[in-house]
Amino acid sequence: MYDKISPCQTGSAITYKDGQPIVPDNPIIPFIRGDGTGVDIWPAAQKVIDSAVQYAYGADRSISWFKIYAGDEACEKYGTYQYLPQDTLNAIKEYGIAIKGPLTTPVGGGIRSLNVALRQINDLYACVRPCKYYPGTPSPHKTPEKLDVIVYRENTEDIYLGIEWPKGSEVAEKLITLLNQDLIPATPEHGKKQIPLDAGIGIKPISKTGSQRLVRRAIQHALRLPKSKQMVTLVHKGNIMKYTEGAFRDWGYELATTEFRAECITERESWILSNKEQNPDITLEENARAIEPGYDALTPEKQAKVIQEVENVLNSIWDSHGQGQWQDKVMVNDRIADSIFQQIQTRPAEYSILATMNLNGDYLSDAAAAMVGGLGMGPGANIGDTCAIFEATHGTAPKHAGLDRVNPGSVILSGVMMLEYMGWQEAADLIKKGISDAIANREVTYDLARMMTPPVEPPLKCSEFAEAIIKYFS
Ligand SMILES: NC(=O)C1=CN([C@@H]2O[C@H](COP(=O)(O)OP(=O)(O)OC[C@H]3O[C@@H](n4cnc5c(N)ncnc54)[C@H](OP(=O)(O)O)[C@@H]3O)[C@@H](O)[C@H]2O)C=CC1
Ligand SMILES: O=C(O)CCC(=O)C(=O)O
Ligand SMILES: [Mg+2]
Image (cartoon, rainbow, N blue to C red; front, side, top):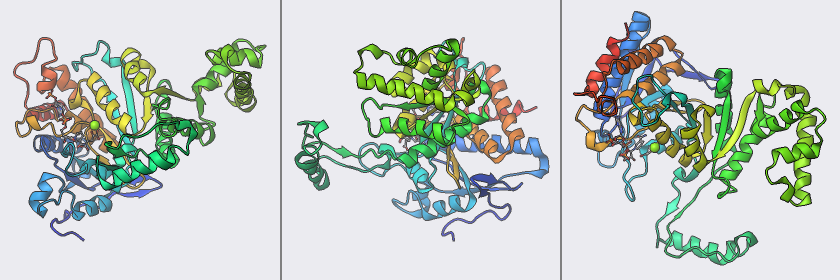
């Protein structure tokens, strides 16, 4: 089954039942070291994870690491341009869970992202990136402790599908001509718009299936959170991209109010119900006016639609969700993407799970990580129904590569997510304690050291930070 690698002699594979991993006491877990700073970070992360498992379970549990290859290391082993060998794909499929360091993607030409390819090939449709504050972490934000969000990023479609053509290529010109001469004129809403002939063209598919399976996972996750954090915000730019990003929002609400009807309340429904709770005699029209800004300026048809919406909500969920019962449900709301970037800064405590499409999620997860200490503290998981790959939010940070200086925290925290996913909570908790204590004692790498007051000098090396975390297990 494998060409140039040999699976571990001890241990067995993680399997899946109904989307949940079944984890033996000695799982074989494939790992990709990664390019750039992967050479520094991965050994540090592996050491911390192994120490935590050993400390928590003694001889009862251990991980058998299976080294697999991608990126530069794969080309060295498998030959030129062999960035993602079949061996690697086979191992991930066979063993069900993998963890990886970052992999380089060139800008402009060159290979397409290996990171994205791994997600698409394994159908890891939910990219889960928690951004939570560890006390003592320096932050550019005044109240970083108020931010505790999880970005749920759709991971398989959107422009990351990589279907695009460069300016001047035969297909781009053909497509532009077809659009300009045929499809755009045949669509009245597009008027006389035309695409410049010297445009590159990219395709942004957002499907109902892809959107709803992501939102489904986000709602399921919200249901496992404490009541005060049971919120899912659908983040989109649906005012501009109506049939892709706008549709994502609509499909999200549709799912919440059908499949999760008993468990969810939308923000608008909550306004309708609470208006009636505060004033049992409120008319449908008064209620409609209260929930719809600019109601009086609407056409009679649009006003009738809002009134109908109020009536439908009261008829369908007053008994199950009214009289305050909605306050115990998962709150599903939506925000326009540009606005959420300022909302997490100005009103961080009001958000919990941010469910969004691929590009928005990519941007948002870096921005949210910055608020709680930077990319050195941003873990992530790519989750599907029969496979999961854990990796940091950050990339290869090439200027720091090989210097033993970057923060391994993101990959270590991705390891924490992996341990939690495996149900090895004791080991995960030990690492979280180790990180908290190391930061509280100002034992940190350069990125956190430079933001502390006074700055920590000299900062710990990458490998020393791992040692410090392990030291604080006891
Ligand atoms: N999943 C993946 O594997 C990803 C891969 N990439 C790829 O990585 C490459 C480099 O991308 P780039 O845009 O530079 O983004 P990076 O995330 O690699 O780095 C940007 C900056 O973030 C900070 N940073 C990143 N990692 C750490 C860390 N572990 N500890 C402390 N600070 C850190 C550094 O800031 P400073 O220098 O200011 O201290 C660094 O210069 C590209 O090829 C990109 O495609 C990008 C994202 C994800
Ligand atoms: O694949 C890459 O090179 C970049 C991906 C990325 O930025 C991300 O997944 O956050
Ligand atoms: Mg990114």
